[in-house]
Length: 293
Image (cartoon, rainbow, N blue to C red; front, side, top):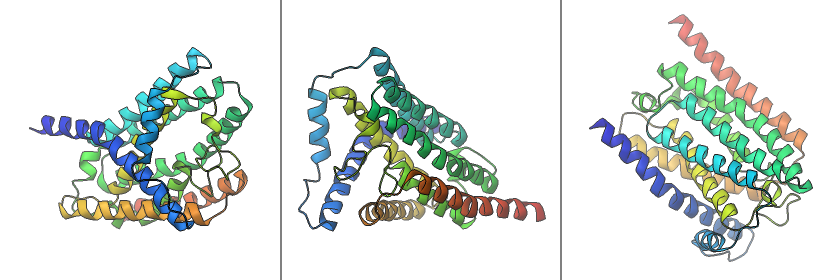
């Protein structure tokens, strides 16, 4: 029975994540437009754009780039499947990092000045986000005794009760992971930004559509990570997790529309300060509490 439930969760993620990610992207555009005093595109516009991209011919820079993008898509989807199957959170972390490495290598292989610049900034962003994700993953282990997602969501008390600092730190680096202002340094959908497409400058047609689709999968995965702080064995915690995820997503949209873009050194400095203060102190606190027990 448990095996079938695991398979069902994986299938639901594979089928529903693109629709949820697309709707969130449409909601993002709609709310951003309203905040800027515009009507904005229809809610389903991301799906129309994706369909157009899949119907367009791709201009491929080199075959190796297509292989690398395939690796990025594969490991992003694999990470989500592993997460929703209740698998090892640490393995999911490494799989997602490997997928990002494929993505950066794909952009770098184009040998374009814009994509190369985007890759350099993408690497800086990874250096800002990876420590906080790793600390949060270790934090889940410290309070539940397991790296398995299925064990973490089966506790009596939500992990956020023990990991409030890591939750705040993860919210901070979520802005970087979603590539939103003030940290949209490597790529952006907004024309008013300095680096409009950056890492995806040389991608076209259905190859670029795969990148968009993978970002929707990753967006759902990151929000699921937020939900992991809230979930416990009580079924009502699912509703609370959905509300927290939606509020977190709205907060990211608000930040995206309020703050101007910062330089890379400001991003690097602020991300590490937040990681050390909120993540590091919270981790030390869990170690201290476990030691006295």
